[in-house]
Length: 170
Image 1 (cartoon, rainbow, N blue to C red):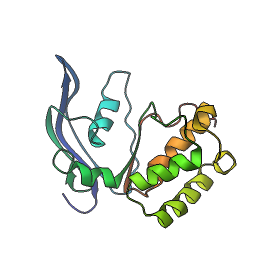
Image 2: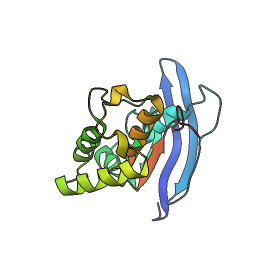
Image 3: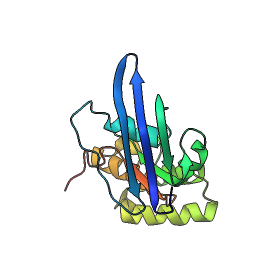
Image 4: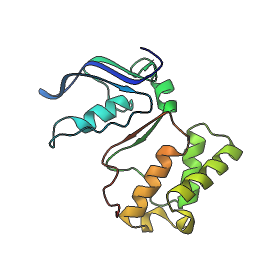
């Protein structure tokens, strides 16, 4: 794989109990490229994103992110990606700022860097005014914004977003 390739998928297949969700797909995504997966419900889009994000093992095939094999080097891949699943698993009892600091620390940022990055993503996603509010008390749109801020807080090389605009106003 050359330095310009961010994602490389070769003959990826995923089967669940006799049902094939992803069938022998191959594609590449260049660094800096924006790509959307389109298809009907059940086409395997979310399954493919979960495999790319190291949350689901494939049945067969090869998948590399930033040059790292998602099966053998999943820790290295996870450090380089920001992932927001369709149903964002936020901690509803935590406050927005507290949650983002917690997630930044989990993603390996130091105390000072995590504070700086949380301030930045809260500004970027319009979360400053709700920073002290409890996540479970926020509207769905604000919860989506928190999820997006979480995906970007550690400045990943790659962002994988599954249905990122659900609940967001234009």
